[in-house]
Length: 448
Image (cartoon, rainbow, N blue to C red):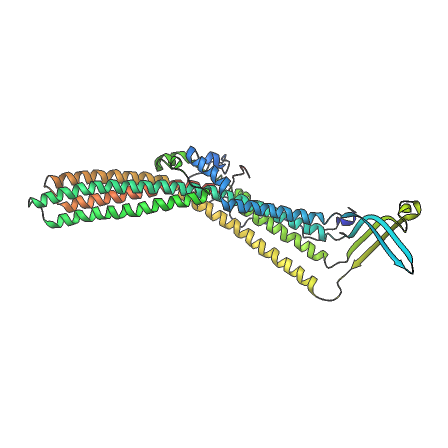
């Protein structure tokens, strides 16, 4: 039987050459990569903050999207087992008895047999290729679940970092409000003494109201951030697990090495999923080709039959049967149409596989470009905040001493507030890019 089923009409599969450069880009935007770097990182090494680790572990247990992805894996595995069973004959046993009476004569019949029915002898590999296609579809579903898992980890960490940043923006807006209210009180006092005009009072009021508006917006944003985090985790996250500060979170998120070669992208789960789909389409071509040749089936049975139950298992009761059959389509274009369809599907999945690699290459390149420049931007932003603090302190002193106008002090205060907001946004961008690099490299096989 093995020799008869050795014929395989599927095209020989060769992994397509990746349509991207061998190495990731280099230049002013990119930090130099060490040749000894092992690309990728398990998420447990990426995340050092114990609170965030706990939150991610809960998400991996409770998130409904991940549960749905795992259920799809179980479904695909079951379908593969069903298709694989078609390669083996189904052996069944049966027993029957019939009783009839005609012209006052009773007629009895007893039989029992065991055998298999309509078993296809897979001479041209049709069933084998269908089984291979089901296997590749199952493996593609497994990679889809791994992609969902990596995405969930990254999204949860991103939501956690965003909450930390918005909490700091809320704290900053409250601090700015306190400072602006003190300035407004002083301005109103000087205006009441006739030392300054009403214009300065109104200008001070604008800063107060802007801070109050920012507080309201930031309170809303923090609440929405918590709702988003709860959805990802699949359950409410208690206050004790919320981020302490963005600065401490920044220090606890590791950099993910990308390596030098773009070959690492071939192990990304979405790329592997696309390749398994391509392999399944390749096997479908073999099944479609085999369908154009004769389909040979065999039905057999062996057992005993007798008109008397007492003699059912005697030597003379032995019976057997074998009924081979063959069918071959002669007219109609269904077989040819199915083959053309299978080839077109193979071309479709080939294009999707190559597009998945190109998308992965672009995503990693973009993240590497950000990684190569974000440290310099963060340092410059911190220096900008320091310069604005000094400028505002000097402008405020000159205003209080009556040397300078209130407008200069107000302008310096607004510049400081804007620089502090930008510094928080830059710190968030640094954390998010490290998380993004972990996701787009996709070389996390922990728990897969």
